[in-house]
Image 1 (cartoon, rainbow, N blue to C red):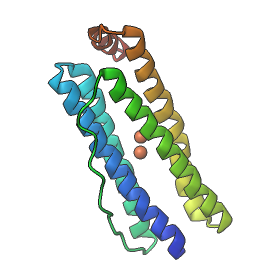
Image 2: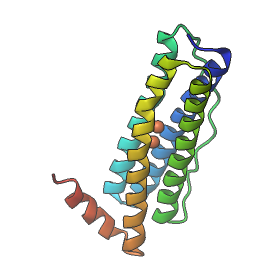
Image 3: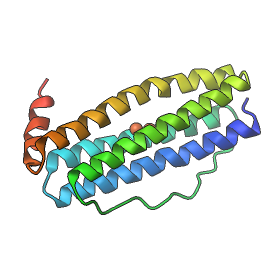
Length: 161
Ligand SMILES: [Fe+2]
Ligand SMILES: [Fe+2]
């Protein structure tokens, strides 16, 4: 059901999603080290979501009779100059991921692969949310400036509803 080209691209995306998961764990670890529990929790949850994304691609490959080949993953960045630098890295990762999803959809459209197109639409919508939340996180951290503890207080209140 998938061309060799789509299969290769989908397998690469499995790697990208797992790499994002690892990167978010590294960011959560950084915040944990800074005693910023709210931010650590937020990125731990984000890491779990990226793991789910990788599994969605894995499942789709298996369901379409394709072979899953998990690629080597790049080492995540573990050290950050500031909370802002970590949040900026996360936003950059989401922008990169959005471009990857768009490229996959462009390929699925060119090949008239409707199953792949339908599968990818979920990710198109997901990336809108991912960019929005990563932008908000960065914005809040920037507004707090040197007082990152304000972000922790903000997160407690933002998650009340
Ligand atoms: Fe993702
Ligand atoms: Fe994401």
